[in-house]
Image 1 (cartoon, rainbow, N blue to C red):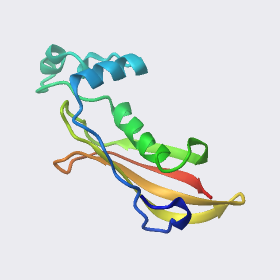
Image 2 (image 1 turned 45 degrees about the vertical axis):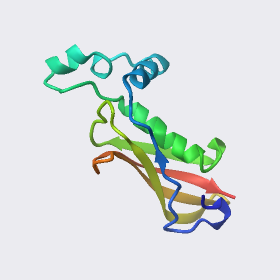
Image 3 (image 1 turned 90 degrees about the vertical axis):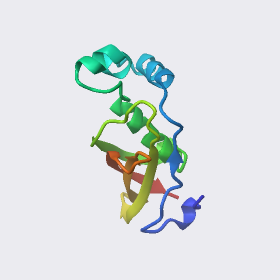
Image 4 (image 1 turned 135 degrees about the vertical axis):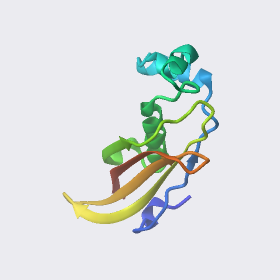
Length: 137
């Protein structure tokens, strides 16, 4: 793990590798998030829409990126965080959340790092991209 004190442009956050997304994970996330869209939990509904199976909530992938950030810095150091959804994460998909420091600036008396973020499946599909700004020590 990279020591936060030695962060420079190009520093990569330790990747967060997620176990395959299970149907149980989808059901639990639906309950926790309040997003009960049947496309995420009901195989018959997914098939009626022409899909092979259900797929993960986009916000679940966003949560994984949030976890990547908070495993690197305390939550109170996050100054901004945003994402763009690019592709679906199928049930049993194996996402990996990654981040790279792309700039370091002085803002409002703080040293801040801007990061490019992404979630990628084992087959190389990028499902989510984003960015964040965090205050450095």
